Image (cartoon, rainbow, N blue to C red; front, side):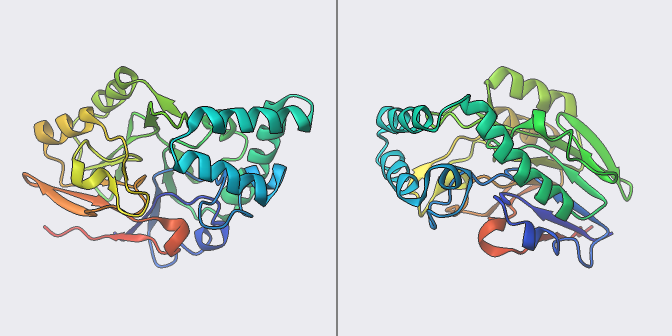
Length: 257
């Protein structure tokens, strides 16, 4: 069985529609949405509402870790837009999800990223697209476990959860052949982004599960330009499947017995 894996799609519906070509199944590890592109300020939900200039200013503040100022900027922009900010966001998110799920190949197995809005997935998921979070699936006689979302950070992205809730999902998955998550296990080499020049958050619960159960593979994304994209923990290969928005290419999971 040939499995293609993507993560951090961030709006690339064009490439997503091709990601399943030649594969028996597609796995998507989340972050379907694009709120703002740090490389192109005209792309994403935020500039769609407020313009590229506002997006550039927001990115500059966030990159400088001036988060309080970034939140004040956002609040002022929302106040100027009028109405309920949540309604504006959900309408824009729903439009993006409609395009992305229409492009998503089938069969596919998906879990959430830290920038996703899980409550809005249900209205867009199509037959053959299986959403799994703290759950398992059997593919070609092998067990795949899925753990979605991210952990709490200063960035306050939409789908960040507390460590205990995340750990409970890891425990619910149990021992599997392939453990699939959006964020990496808490290993520094896997967490450092060489372009953003910062450490992202990884999961201690994932690391503990890997050490305890030794799955054959652990697949994840989240860190767009990792210091290390692949390393071994015991018998387990930990693999960052790549920044799909940037590359447009899925990772090919090859099972070597």
